[in-house]
Image (cartoon, rainbow, N blue to C red; front, side, top):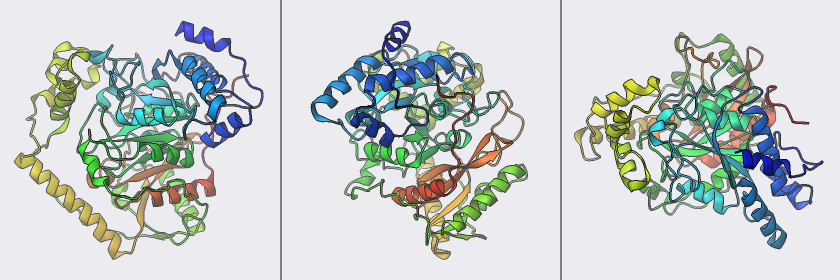
Length: 502
């Protein structure tokens, strides 16, 4: 770390390009115009990290930095001088969640039990973004093993990750480290995971665009699992367009993740076919079942009501009174953390310090807040895919999808909308007041895609997000709606705690 900081201080800063709130298109235009080099871009981001992650506001969002970042940036500059941009993500500094296997960098899923583990090969999505020209700048803090949707605390990094919009507030979980880092412009875009909330919730809490794609659209290979029945990995960014650019790179079938066989033969989608008029003629149902509860915050509901007005103003028809007749969930657990983690750790061989969930529990190297959950998971029956519990679970998920499709057909809906969280970000350490997470049910259970976009602020400074939920394989349409809403409202602004450096 000390050597890396010394190297970056030797890199002269450009006068014409500022990384705060930068976009991929803006970065590439500046590089092509000769206004900035990749080394200068990386140096600017590293300066911001040095000033704001452990110092100043002390966001505490990052676990490890890429010690080869300056060398990799110099190589990208060399290649650009020879033949231009190396790919659609040329010199895009990325923040990657700590549960993605990343060659040359520790990947510990937020747990001391996995400290020191360095993967021998990249996770599929990490490999894809590198091939597209991206540079992995840092690994981000996460809720340990991705357990918590409400806060970002782990045993691998002391202390909580702070919300850059209000330093006494949580980032949501489990991808709060990535969200805080991208919101504070420590990197240009990020990669995270979402089992029940963890891309969309932290995006809502930090005024970001976050995409949970259709189950089978993207590979989870090389990512520590929480529950493979619902695990998804994908992008978080400050703009919908940048999130779409990353999604375009990471989608595709992968022989190491059989769920992606569902995407076989599907045509290549143009996720960048974005339009300010993308909401015109679209019918969206208000999914009250996702968010209406007695503890919903009145200010969040007012912000959402105003967002519905903005959707109508942008040309959408917003339909109220939609009811989804949901099936009853079966008893028993199918696969789950115990089953999935044991198989994942076994696949890593001798490279990983613990070989099973039992060894994790025995090590005692984890945050006290996850002890009960780890011990309960260890005692749980690891029902495999052929078990009666899994057969029942698969039938339930199929019925859930059908219920959503039937509701959409009955009202001729293109999709649904609802507030991503019904309550503002909690104070750090507060586990008593209502959380308000609305993301755990509809998208994870159906496998349908969902996108979060900023919809405004409560308490003056606390971000709130709106979710667009669509049918399977509708990412292109969702991104068009999200982009149209984003461009019509322009709610995103940089947090005051991490201003541009002089």
